[in-house]
Amino acid sequence: MIKIKKRKILLLPGDGIGPEVMAEVEKIIKWFNSKKSLDFEIDKDLVGGAAYDKHGSPITDEAFYKAQESAAVILGAVGGPKWDNLDFSKKPERALLKLRKELKLFANLRPAICFKQLVDASSLKPELVSDLDLLFVRELTGGIYFGEPRGIKPIDNGERKGINTHVYTSSEIQRVARVAFDLARKRNNKVTSCEKSNVMEAGQLWKEEVQSIHEKEYSDVELNHMLADNCAMQLVRNPKQFDVIVTDNLFGDMLSDEAAMLTGSLGLLPSASLGAKDKNGNMRSLYEPVHGSAPDIAGQGIANPIATILSFAMALRYSLDLDKEADSLEKAVQDVLDEGLRTKDIISKGMKEVSTSVMGDAIISKLQ
Ligand code: IPM
Ligand code: MG
Image (tube, rainbow, N blue to C red; front, side):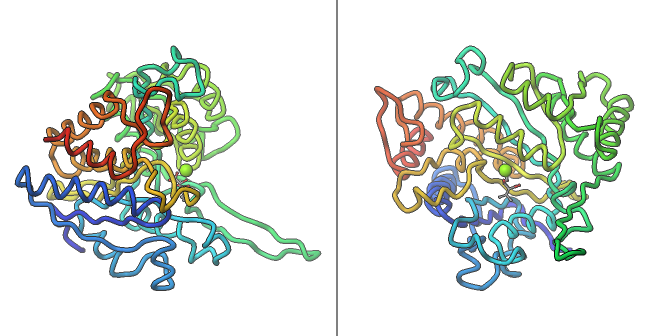
C-alpha cells in the first residue's frame, strides 16, 4: 500500500487548454508557499494525449504512482481530435478513467453555482437561475462505465454486437449515498436521488438502498426520489428546487453537463472526485474543471482558468484541511469578477476582456 504524503500535490495539465489553465494554478500554489509559508510540494507529469505522444500510453506507471502518493491530484483536461482514432485502450480518456477507478474515487462532487455577475450568460431566464447553488454527487467508479461484460463482438450474419453492462452492488450505492447525505447536512439538508427504477433493476436497487440508508442513518435529511428523465426536465423547469442530487455514473455525467450549462459558464465550474478515508484520515482525491480540453482555442492564451483555480480551492477545502485559504481564493475570484474582468468565454458588454494569465495574476493580486 502506497502511503499518501500530506502536502504533495500532483499537477497533470493534460491536453488542449489544460497546460494554460494549470499554469495559473501553479502560480497560485507558489504564491501560497512563498506568501503564506505553506509547504506544498508540487510535482508534475503528462497525462492523456500528451502522455501518449511521448510514451505511447495515456498515463505511465510512474505518473500513476505519483498520483497514488499525492494528497491531491489536479488535472487540467484530456483528449482532442488528434487522438480520436486511437485504439480504445490508448485513448486519452482512459487515463482519467484509470485514475478514477484505481484510486477508488467513487464520489464526484460537481457544484453548479450561478455567479450573480454572470446570470445573463445563462440560456434560462435570470429569475430561474440567479443564486442557483446545487451540488451533484455522481457515482464515479461503477455502473455502465466499468461493468463487465463489455466489448464489441462478431455475431451471426456478419453482424456485430456492442455490449456494456450497467451494474451496481448495495455497498457501492450506500457509500455514495452517505457522501450525499453528509454534504446535504452542511447545506440545505435536501437530497434528490435519481435513477430509472421504472425500467432498470439496478435502478430499483439504487432507490431501495438510498431509501434504507436514509431511514437508518439520515432521517433528519429530506429525501426525494426522482426518475432521471424527469430530473433532466426539472433542471430546466425549476433548478432551484434542488440542493444535492445523487445519481449513478452515466446519469450523473449527462445531468451534470445540463446543470453546468444552466449557470451559463462552463469555464467556471470545478469538480472534486473523492475516495474513502484511510485509517489515518487521509484520502485520495482528484480535482478537475468540468470543461474539457477545448482544442479549438488551445494555445491562444484566451482560456478561462477560473474552473481549474476553483478546483484547487476545493482541494484546499476537502484534501488539505485549509478552509480559510479555500475561502480566500474563492473570494478573490468573486472580487475579480466584480471588477468586471472577463475571459473571452464570458465576456459581455461593458466588461474588460483579459487573457488567461492576466486573469490568474488578477486573482493573485486580490489574494494579497
Ligand atoms: C466527464 C467527462 C468524462 C466522463 C470523459 C472525458 C471520460 O465527460 O468527466 O464528465 O464521461 O466521465
Ligand atoms: Mg461528462
